Structures are given as structure tokens and as C-alpha cells.
Length: 234
Image (cartoon, rainbow, N blue to C red; front, side, top):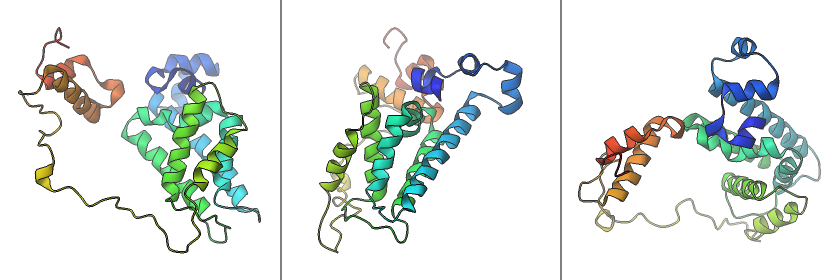
């Protein structure tokens, strides 16, 4: 977690993990097949710690739905490295990391809406509220660190969505889908149109390559091949 928080997931290597943990390479491979398995195990370990902390808050009589947000802020203040990785950095680890993060947000949302909780009326899906706080806290961590004053900011943001009626104002569908003839036709990912400008084809090829291989394994050779441009053009 220390290495991923300091250098980012894309720079996470077995060598850096060994230097930070003080164990030998042989010891590392006794426990993990590769650095990705190690990262996922570390993520789950710290995610479980956060969930236990939230569960303890849920069992308190004064708990309210917004208290989960207080717990997230406290976690970011006291455990900034783990918070950076849990909240955003794992997105760089590809589809498996996204699923881990989504699972964590869903578990936190379940804790926030547990039976018997004294909820504050917030007209916002709990998963979206928690996901928004994840993003907000990560930005603050990147800017130099989280502070206790963030609790008031997060609560003020959430309370903007408070309402006094029993009828929820939030609807899952924001607007009706646009008719097909209103959408700009575009080729499927991986097949950019030759009429597009080279720069747009490169961006499209990059998206297709990352979608297929993940950011860490994306190479310039794959991108230029998909984009139909030369390496010099790239």
C-alpha cells in the first residue's frame, strides 16, 4: 500500500515492494504469484479494516446515514496512504481493480442503509454519495493531505441533497435516451475511421488498447497499429 500510494499502481513492482517490506524475493513468492495478486490482497485487507470501522459506527445508537461519510473522512485523515489506494488508485489496476472498488462502495452503502439506522433524508443514491466522497477525498489527498475540517465540508455537500418529503426526488434515469439519429455515428473501439484526423485516431486507438490490455500493458506499437499511423506520426 505504501508503494502504490507513493508511486502509483502503474509503478508498482516486486522490487519496490521488497525494498519497502524488507523481505526477500523468495519469501515474496512463497505468498504471492505476482505483484498484482499482492496488490489485490493488500487492497482487501485494508478494505476490510475500513468496513469494520464503519460497522462499529453503525452499531452506535447515534448513528445516521451521514456518519458513514464522517468515517470515510476520519480514515483519510488517519490512514492517508490506504485511503489513496482504496478510493482511487486501484482504478489503474484494470477491470479487477474496478470490481474491487465497486464492491467496497456497495458494502459501505449496505452498512449506511442497514435496518435500524437513523437515516438523514438525502435524495441521492448511497453508492453515488459514497463514490463522490471517494473522489473528493482523493483530490484533497493529492493536494497535500486531508484534515479534520473536511468532515464539515463533506457533510455540507451531502446535506445539499437533503429533502423533507417522504417521496424520493431522485430517479435512476436522468433523461430519456437520445434517438439513434441524434447520435454521431462512430466505429467500434479498435476500428477508427480513416476520415478522422490522425490525432483523433490515436486517441481512439489508445482507448481501444487500454480497454483490451489495461493501462499497464498498453504499448505504443499497439496504439499506432490500431490508429493506422506511423510511430513517427504518434
